[in-house]
Image 1 (cartoon, rainbow, N blue to C red):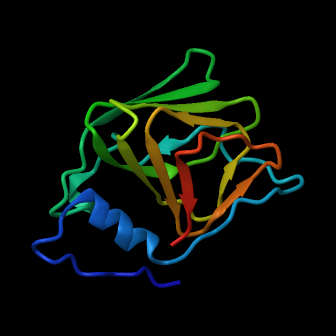
Image 2 (cartoon, rainbow, N blue to C red; image 1 turned 135 degrees about the horizontal axis):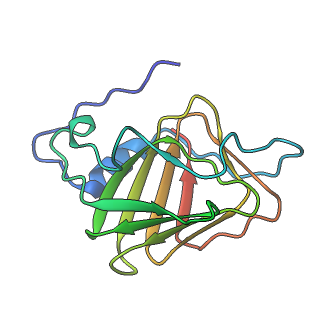
Length: 157
């Protein structure tokens, strides 16, 4: 599958415009799956950090950091700016594991680009106090019992 390349007009560099362009490719509804397991139990950041301005020229990617709990069961993403564009090598959440986005407020937005070669597997808990968008060109697989915050959106390009 060829990646979709859309030029960014000089006057259109907002995060809202970027989300619209990325999500224009289509929707994938989350559905239950049998014995498929997450490849990793928690998401893995792309390279050393979460934000990569070089991947998103002309866009303010914001600031965020991630911390893994000592027991390895939880990843906390601390978003320092109201809007952030985050890049992940993979974004799987295993059974009994959790990812929490701590954002400045309820109107904060985190756009998560997932550069994974297969579908993201979400079997654990995903929570946020703002809006979280997950984008994986290969889709998503989730447990039938998945509960997520109403402001979490999963889309496929």
